[in-house]
Length: 367
Ligand code: THG
Image 1 (cartoon, rainbow, N blue to C red):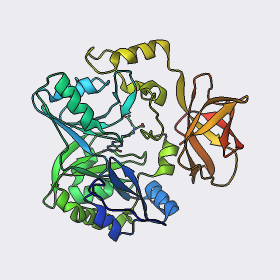
Image 2 (image 1 turned 135 degrees about the vertical axis):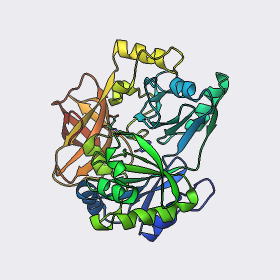
Image 3 (image 1 turned 180 degrees about the horizontal axis):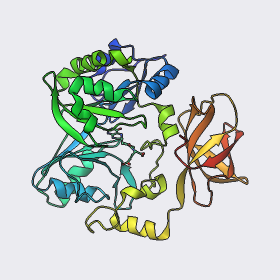
Image 4 (image 1 turned 60 degrees about the horizontal axis):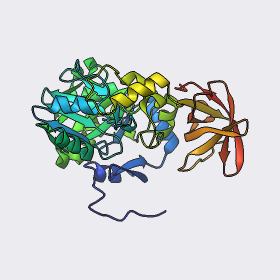
């Protein structure tokens, strides 16, 4: 269709060459990098994730490393989730907010040591933010982007694949916990995590020169389970109700609106950024919330890039922030960021190019 102009601004993933060799057919941009979004067979890629094992180049989930005596303090100042009981080797899904309580990223935080943390970030420039906050608060901490690139292995067969590659100890990893290891001499951390609800692991490659070799080791280890290349799967994540920061959020979304309230601890210290605002929002109640919407119609419908207005009784009540054809439900399903006056079971209309598509609101996840 069209090409991509190379530029040093578009930083390559260590797995780029391997994904090209395996037939990548589409990319998206994320954190100033390219992320594979298709290998040409979207439905087969989906069923492989549901039934087997799929491997994904998610190097775009960059690590913002906090190192030094104040690393833990800075981590807590940045996150509205209580980190006081977070142990070395543990990961946690966290909300980063600005002073207004607006969500600015939803990373996975990994505690590597008492003085070393990674924020495995979604698509926004958190190193600028972390460095600015560290400087303003006069903290003794360095904020770096280390040479670390996640490779996800997801699906019901992922555990067998990663155990055959790394050893049976990976079977004992608890959700979001990780361990540093080496895979055929390649330094890596292995975590039980990933952006699907099919189970799996993320291998954080810690030497970018070894990307092709690690990709091929995973591919080889996965052969008995018919592993194949895939991507953070759009259909599966909508079915599973997983949030996409920037896709399902806008510049006024707070964590309570997008089902992240359980990751906000109102009792964290007062110097946590945004906590005052979050306490107020919690007290008064958010004006929007996130629900699912199931649309009428038996055919896949493309909704394109943009949000679409949702109306009820002729008035705009919210936005459809994504929409996917569900291969399991055989329906178009999406997320609604919508007035809290609207609840599951309500009938609504989605405005698509001048036409109105009827739909019904429901709780998330769909599956
Ligand atoms: N892997 C890594 N880093 C990442 C992502 C990832 N950084 C950005 C982005 N993805 C973070 N977003 C999410 C969103 C949801 C989940 C994980 C990462 C997730 N949520 C579960 C849920 O909502 O049901 C469980 C949350 C919980 O109970 O703690 O897993 O994919 N390395």
